Length: 241
Figure 1 (spheres, rainbow, N blue to C red):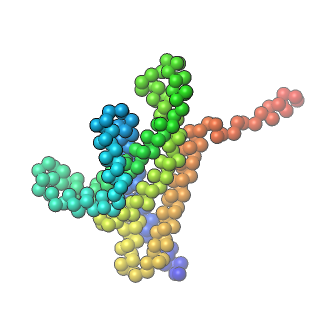
Figure 2 (spheres, one colour):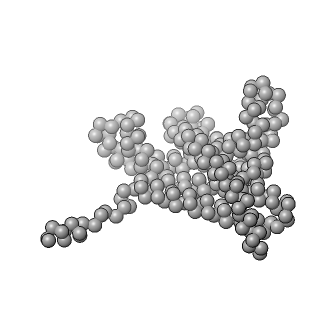
Figure 3 (cartoon, one colour):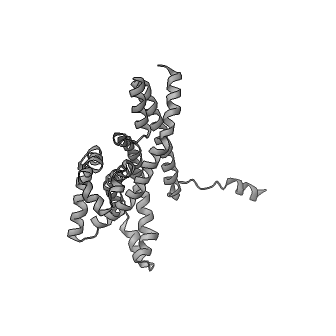
């Protein structure tokens, strides 16, 4: 392998990292809101609302993300006159917004199941104790249910974030010049696929390693029982002196 060429490739592909992170974290942010709504719909106890949420999750978890991107970007183009009348064409003609929409709809389906599992894992005795202390409604959810659910769901949600970072590579098929898009462009110019894709893989590894460490730090911060208590031995020795 030509390491000089790979270093130059690394420098060029780094220019696509901001767009990769932009796509990933924007879609994760919007997807989190959608996922919370879907999770609450699944737990609402109202049959019609539950069925709508179940159908949404079934469709978007059961079909490939690549197909969803194609349908949104290329498929909706067939309805351009209708979209123009509704004032939506300026949104759907932009590959960036189509990619964000597809990624958001996809991660929302997966994340809703993660959030629902986290909410259902909250120990019921803790909820009962909070009610006995006078908490109810939104205060109970904010102080007891939500913090515990976040701690329970965080490891799985971290995996979903990593999957979304990798899923942004599919945006290259609709002309988005993120890391994979730039790599494909360089391959078409140099025909050196091995070196270029190895470098692209290394970049994704670095990004996901950093995200993994951040999630671990957040999990540690949200879990006081995992922190070691400060040592009291120096204090005892000082007292004896």
